[in-house]
Image (tube, rainbow, N blue to C red):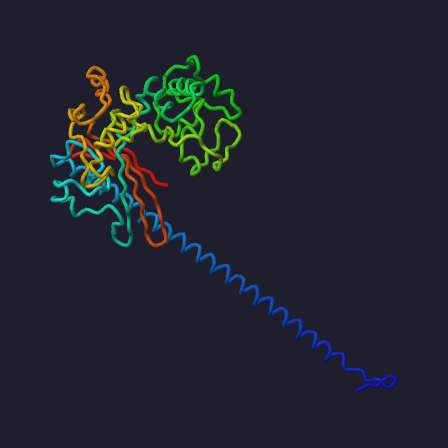
Length: 372
């Protein structure tokens, strides 16, 4: 060991060895951290891939559940026509979630469940609504449309613009009515588009029509829907007070036979038909609801045929000549139905929709099927 000025000097090689060992330890720690990061990334990637594969399998299974629910609805609707009660369609029948009429509850339909049905590893609930409870927008004339806006409560100045614009939207020409709108109006908007100039396929098209606001379209359902104006107008606040308790969505459908079923239509829908005022509409609903005044129960007394719509059964009916004109728009039988299927498989959920047309007990066609 060397000394200089009384101080010891350590060998240079021992100092280098200590620094080398520290550097090696740092390198080892970096390598371990890098390997840990890579392992974690690989594990996360595998977890994502596994989840995507599981979701893909669940999606396929959910679609089969949805289609199975539609097939169950087809069976119920077809079977219900095989009984004498099949000559009319009413809210106390099994397809509508009612208790069922005697002929239904004593046959194959008695064993059918549409609510919380277990199928394989999943569950599904089926809800059926007949579309003849609404008026068909594609067959609406100015009188029917004006009555609809009166029932909603729209002021006359707004209604006249909306009526003419709806008719312009559906006709095949490009000539606007006095208060309507055609291509020259829609193409001049900040976000231009062409009018349909054809039948309405989806009722929400009416939101694109000049003079139709979300409040008029949705009515009381406004707060549950957010619609970005295609016309480029200012956005609306869904919490804003809405003066309308009902909207066009409660009165019309683009898909039906064109007749209105007096056994299932609301009082508001009945009021837009010629010859039916508010009092008469309420009387029709009251008669079919039976003694307890609640629809869809065992004591319902639906109209078995149009002949039952007479002053002896329903107070306030119009004179025979007006009644005859009204009968051109009404029926007691529904043939078009919308089916909603809520499918559940573990934590996965999916809602399916279908439109069915019932032609006879052997033929119930699926004309539309979609999901959200």
